Amino acid sequence: MTDAHHLDLLRLAQEAARRAGERLRDGRPADLAVAATKSSPIDVVTEMDIAAEKLITDLISEHRPDDGFLGEEGASSEGSSGVRWVIDPLDGTVNYLYGLPTWAVSIAAEQDGETVVGVVAAPMRGETYHAVLGGGAWATGAWEGERRLACRPSAPLDQALVSTGFNYVTEVRTHQAEIARELIPLVRDIRRGGSAAIDLCDVAAGRLDGYYERGLNAWDYAAGDLIAREAGALTGGRPSERPSRDLTVAGTPGVFEPLQRLLEDFGAWHD
Ligand code: IPD
Ligand code: CA
Ligand code: CA
Ligand code: CA
Image 1 (cartoon, rainbow, N blue to C red):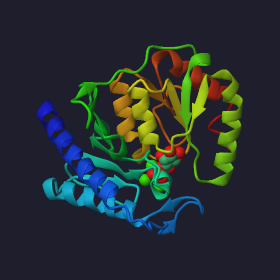
Image 2: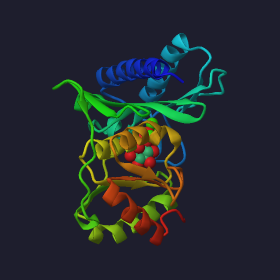
Image 3: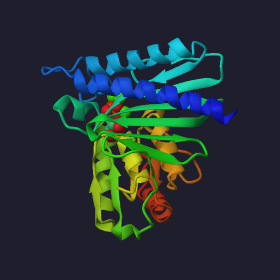
Image 4: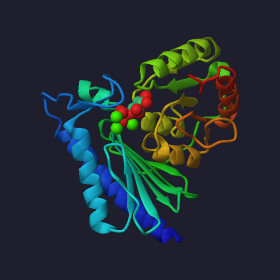
């Protein structure tokens, strides 16, 4: 596929992420409530998650009617063009519900199963991150123009700032807490930001040395994974695998492998 095709997909993803981000930022009801719960009573969805996904899929379908979709809030279609959009319309719903600023719109485009474009808009930071396969990772901000992202120089693991997240299912999160307890004495500190997409972009931007989580879905990591890799970070899942529901790990080249090995030793992907 040509670079021009990837750039067309990028522009569309950026426009969709911008519009959805503005709608979420400017249209958040003061009395925003939980509309429904999903995998557990703490796995919540609001009317704004659903509205943002509709805005994104309507815009993309208008321009590219033959593409497929995979979206957290139910978008699911095969398409016939070879392009599939993987969408998390609001990553960080719990933060958004409480008025905390760490949330994002995450949109990736796959061409024949390979992620070729990733866009993560973080409106409350005034920043949007993007990458095209082979073209580096970039941030555009309200405060400055476009800047190229590069992950941090590698630090030893005991000086690494590592982020993680907790799945909504009680048994999984309890196990994740045990892993975090084992890890905490071995790293500089642990963060729990509340948006997997932003965690991955923070690895890309040199604001974290590493990140790991299990139980993620493709819509959580598809865009952020490409952005992290294009910024020079390494990403994966279980050893020699790509990120998956079992495990997603990202880190600077020096932190990725020891972190992945430790997680393996801790049995991070077993319940
Ligand atoms: C969640 C966030 C969170 C992570 C959870 C995800 P959502 O996504 O990315 O940081 O820990 O595993 O499900 O539900 O807010 O889109
Ligand atoms: Ca969710
Ligand atoms: Ca998510
Ligand atoms: Ca979401």
